[in-house]
Image (cartoon, rainbow, N blue to C red; front, side, top):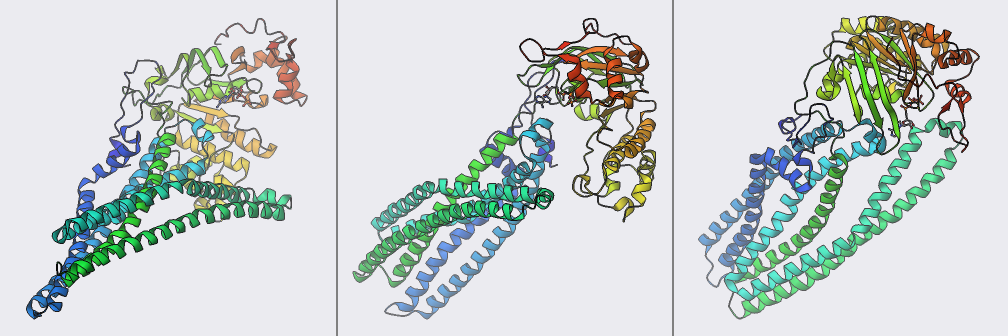
Length: 640
Ligand SMILES: Nc1ncnc2c1ncn2[C@@H]1O[C@H](COP(=O)(O)OP(=O)(O)OP(=O)(O)O)[C@@H](O)[C@H]1O
């Protein structure tokens, strides 16, 4: 992270003690202009030098033309003057050398500045982006976001480089030519100005006309890129369904649509070149004729004719670069604006300014009258109260959609509660920094998320400063050590994309090893053993049993057998606790829901089959929550 990022200036609204805090967006992400100025200001001396050197180099290139005029005048006059000719030549050569030196210096400065800003931009955008909730990454594809971050860094470089190399030189040439032409004919200067402005404006207008074509090509190209990646990612399905030819012709279709869009966009650029060539011919021809007439009348020298022709060509060539640069820059500018709109949205969940960097050491968890809904949707949790003393192991069970995962997500503060309060170790979670809150919780999810790095690094991800011995100890505790040592490179073996080279059970155990290494007072098991075969489940269960010792555990479980040994089971239906007690007591409870779930699962029914068999459809035909025999159980549950 750069200093700039570290000092990100969050304008904040006054925070209250217990309400969630919504931070405003850092200033530099608010508009493309502010964004660009932010990075220019961060390296003001380097960028200042870059622009100064570029202006000096452009000026030099105009003066070089003047040097040529002096040389021609010295050798072509009626009385040749060798000493003036040699001086003019020396002046000319020195200027050419200076111009090269200045342009090369500008190249060096541009490389130094834009490359480092490219690093900063990517880190800053990534840093801010990671603060968005998980839902944001579900709504915006990961590949598209990654591409946007990289392209934005590129866009900044293009905007700077275009300004330095395509805008500064023609503008300086124009100003220089205007001054030089004015020394022999002011009307010539004014005509040149009018012509150059008309050519540039005409080309810009024409260029804007093509924006839609270029945009259509960019869209097609992005679409085709996505299709190609989709096929490669799903190569298993392509092979399994013998779909090679089908997919090939599907892609051929997409490629040819892209080719049409590309050709149209390219041809438009060619048309603008033709237009420019015609303008160049008319203007350069007129200026040359005009200067020749002035020379014929003896008003100007041969050198003046040379400088008029050289500068006219220079300006006209520059005008095309200028027009194209301006069109291109507006496109990059709007891309930047779009990126800032997507990435620079306010964080839904942000640390309050006074949030404490305290890592809770006690594993006590309290949900106090919590209500929660996703967006404007129905309430997923209502009047939800649950107190879990430190060290207790609680299983949360219930049908699909009951709100079980929501409960554990709220605990990690992936969302903020809308009513009530959530406390961990006695601290309201909204009063803690998110990083310190999460440092107190280890999560073993159903799908452990692994990086395409070595298996050792993946375990160490939980605690980057852990020693090799600690990593191995965690792996041993999670029953991973044996299988890791059997891998070709042991702990250095790369695990493949998202851990593809490991089995489901092995991935789970790596997840458990991470939790051992993180060593937190609270453990969340989010359906950690579903989807495993019996052998894997036995291994994972043994690892979990060790992990859970002396910690608070909250486990979302579909298979009731996995929580049979827990201290407590909470049955949740439609966001409310309907039963709460030890698994032993609940299993024995006459007519109890858990007892019926248990016996139905023993008969081989899944949790959803059980839920369906226990919920009676309402008269309207939907499930209105008419849960059999839940009248008493719907009373707020008591902590055992
Ligand atoms: N990100 C989300 N945006 C909108 N609604 C959501 C989101 N996540 C969950 N829901 C909804 O909230 C309700 C509770 O979901 P939750 O995932 O907590 O249930 P669950 O009990 O864990 O279900 P399952 O056992 O199927 O995982 C469901 O109706 C679900 O559709």
